[in-house]
Length: 201
Image (cartoon, rainbow, N blue to C red):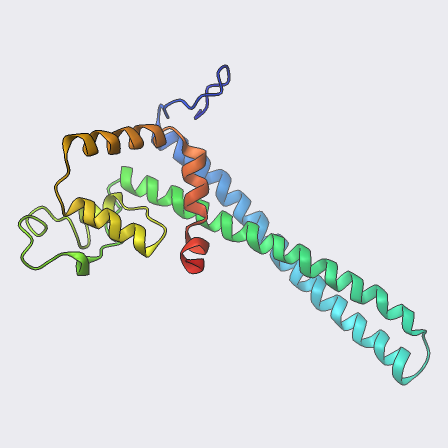
């Protein structure tokens, strides 16, 4: 559980592997359902389009049907397009959620190297400790901890890792991490939005 049912306040995740594993299975099931809907609506749109073409031919070329009949396939096609757009959005979110939990389990299972941003280009060649402590590059600290969704977010975290901070700043960052740690639903939501946010930004 990630929320205290009595107080509504977030609580710590007691067993991350189990919680992530259960959520990953649920999100994969949701992804499979969204993919089925996506295929079904795609076929329905094609069928509606074909029916519309046939009715248009009968109404316009053969005059066998009144033109008003064309409103039915047009309306149905428009409704299917709108519904298909919603399913595409659900599909994108499900893909993002699956990736979020796969990356989380990868961190716990030591299979994470290369799953995050490496950004070796952000390290100055003469940096006093970046190379020795593997701050950047594949299998680096940045690769492990960075879940930034934008280029500017990656650069900001890289700057933090490459620069000293005062004790007050360090404590503030630790407090922020402590606040976000148990809020798994929020972190999943942000993680699932990652691809779309990056493209939009």
